[in-house]
Image 1: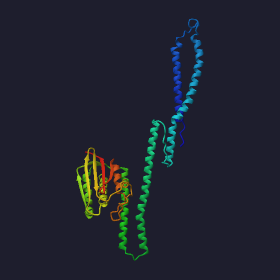
Image 2: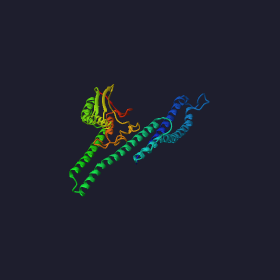
Image 3: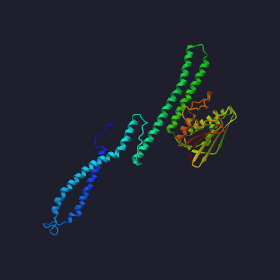
Amino acid sequence: MDRRPGLSVRWKLTLSYAGFLAVAGALLLAVVWVFLLRYVPDNTQGLLGIAPNRYLLVRMFAPAAAVAMVLLLVFGLLGGWILAGRMLAPLTQITDAARSAESGSLSHRIRMKGRQDEFRELSDAFDSMLRQLESHVAEQQRFAANASHELRTPLAISRTLLDVARKDPTRDGGELIERLHVVNTRAIDLTEALLLLSRGDRGNFTRESVDLSLIAEEAAETLLPLAETRRITLDVTGGPARTSGSAELLLRMVTNLVQNAVVHNVPADGTVTVHTEADGDTSVLRVESSGRRLAPELVPTLTEPFQRGTERVRTDEHAGVGLGLAIVHSVVRAHDGTLDLLPRSAGGLLVTVRLPGTR
């Protein structure tokens, strides 16, 4: 990057050091003049006739003072240049790291050594920023690759069905239309889920006062037929839990949690309990469900996009698109909350959402 014409920071610091040193030398000479030379008699006999007078002292002192000032100025320039270089060396490392990041290399780290001073704190903060940025970019790249793969699958199936129909005109058109409808519905659901996930990540929504208990009752009422079909008991307990946010996004969050709890449950006689409460300045939503036992190392990955889990992949009409808990995590994060997933010892999952509460 080309710099504009002008002095560099190193030169400015050097001139500042030299200028301060010259000023200090001038002040010292002024102190000598004021408190020493002014008391020397200015006559031909000097002091008691045995000491030189002020005129002679000034003539001897002035050349030496001028030489001292020149030496101070030169010493200030050289010393200031060296000191400024040493002081600005950490900034050079940070600049090189920033240029590497600008070129696309986010894996570079400064890892500055030495005492914990301001430059070390700046370096550590820059390394932390690069680490988070690298993680975010890798997550976005992985998400884009998975989204492309998931969107390509229904499109490829549709093209295959259309090619088969074109090559075999006698094939039953009703069956083809039904299969195309299922495939297109899945593609539309995936697209809507991606848009909702992107909206939650951006966090650009209008906030309003929302009661999580009412949201939970609405989501449970919507999914009650599905729970009854699967012979699962669905209960909503607790009391009011108010928070500030988007009612639409929070409804989708609770709906996804309850639907996951119903779909990924035991084949019959399972339970799903949705509980809401206000805990101090926090509004809490818990969704506890029965189901198969989950490996502890599998649970943290369930909030990743398109992650369905080894034992949670389904092939029926409620297979989903693998974005349910990813959307939940995005909505919770957009509302400045926390999401905790805990496998139950008896099987199933306990999901706890904590959001900032409001009165």
